[in-house]
Image (cartoon, rainbow, N blue to C red; front, side, top):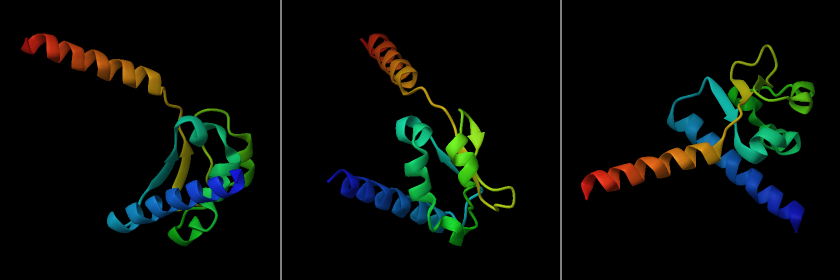
Length: 107
């Protein structure tokens, strides 16, 4: 069941990436962020499997050794692939504070 769930998540992400590439007429980069994007070379590898059609080539060694913000595409990849750290908790706290400040200003 867990492997099936991973396959479904990977399929959906690949579908979104393909849709965006088509809608935007191509892309310069693909960026992995957040929990799975930052911490799972396995999932990133599965997502990038077949993406070479769009000019994005994953460097498997870089993907496995990724340590924080880095490029994980091959040097000759036309579409760059990056892993970028995020801090979702900080973003949520800032947005919540902003909403509270707006609410106080209205009342």
